[in-house]
Amino acid sequence: MDAATATFARHRPRLKGIAYRMLGSVAEAEDVVQDAWLRWHASAGQPPDNAEAWLVTVTTRLAIDRLRAAQVQREHYVGTWLPEPVVEAAREDGPPTPEELVERADSLSVAFLAVLERLAPDARAAFLLREVFEVDYAEIAATLGRSEAACRQLVHRAKAAVQEERPRFAVPRERHLALLHSFAEAAAKGDLHGLKALLAEDVALIGDGGGKVPSFGRPLVGGQRVAQVYFAVARRHPGALRVEVAQVNGAPGLLRWVDGVLESVQSFEWENGRIVRIHSQRNPDKLARVAAARAAAA
Image 1 (cartoon, one colour):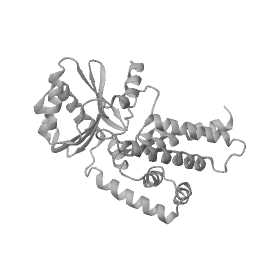
Image 2 (spheres, helix red, strand yellow; image 1 turned 90 degrees about the vertical axis):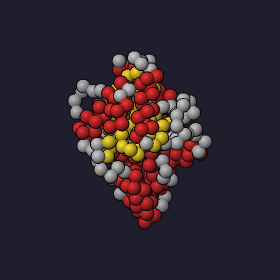
Image 3 (tube, one colour; image 1 turned 120 degrees about the horizontal axis):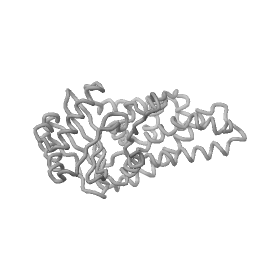
Image 4 (spheres, helix red, strand yellow; image 1 turned 180 degrees about the vertical axis):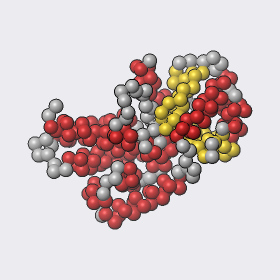
């Protein structure tokens, strides 16, 4: 491996992390990183003084361009748009690397990405670069072609919007996992009482079917109503339903299978030991990568 390739490989996890958080799509993030590689390869004769800054700038600008194009398409998206989920595969090769720990941070959660979706592309980029990837304002200003003062304002407003949507009471990871196992068991059995016990009265179920499969056009709100949806699924598919706890976008979530087919990937927000929000990705196009990876690992 030559020096230029080694340099790019070293920064690739960071670049992919930026692109995925900007776009909410693994495939599009990989395309952006590939485009960045082509530009990096073309500049090999005159390498920049700061390779990391150059690569972050190029990747961010490419992601902004793609996001602007994607927003036009998402205006005509059927139902609620949710990001393509990232489901971590089981591993036996030791502890995660520092780069992987970044990928599993709160900034990877489906709830966080859904909030970012409401930000303009430049605001989204400025916020991510500063708050997630700790890029200094001078570099952000150069990347976005704005003044440092303007970038500070972008980050300030975006940060306020994100903080307003974050759960008020964080649940410890071990507690989150234990509660989710209880919910998964109740969902698989169609235990209506057990489901209701773990749902807040004002819980919201948000689904993305993309017009490909049935899904709610707007959030379904209420513990009784959401519990009945899970109860109905279990009763509709007796003996064919499997619910698996997995790492979804950096936090414990659920994969739900019907007759061996991945039907949804679900992520959860908790407060005071109860679920307050469920994001359910049901769009088959956005589940294909997860299903293929699970099949390959089986």
